[in-house]
Image 1 (cartoon, rainbow, N blue to C red):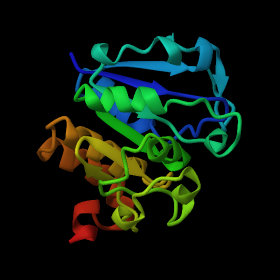
Image 2 (image 1 turned 120 degrees about the vertical axis):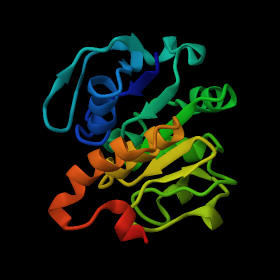
Image 3 (image 1 turned 90 degrees about the vertical axis):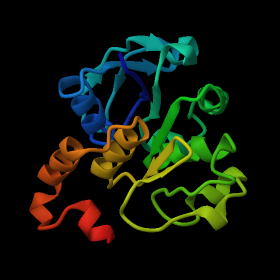
Length: 195
């Protein structure tokens, strides 16, 4: 069974990883688990209180298929937990790694974006990390998948979900339909918009 572990922190952005976890669990039958620093409860930016399944420090990369880092304002502060080694180990073990919104700062700090296409909330945001991947930055509203690494702006939870599922080899008509449901309000699907 495919297992997604999502790292949540105090003030995490509720909407950013909700779609991939909900679709993964309810439609694809994935196991979903949530990790927080020290395994402590956290409260989202919308006030939702979440009890963790495990501590970030106890994540076993061999026991997961996808490691996601949910965005939130903490990633731009000194209070951010350092998960760069965890990200490196997960990617080295062949797992899908995803960072959305300001969580892309941690992915950049890990060095995983130095040589791969990626995106974030805005050009220049990742420069503060000391990363060397500015030439590989992609602007636009779509999440980016490169070498099992998915990055997205905080405004792109639908394409973030789609790229994670694509990285797992699940890009098919079911995914197209599901993405289309979320894109219908705009009169186009993300694939049509990108063409």
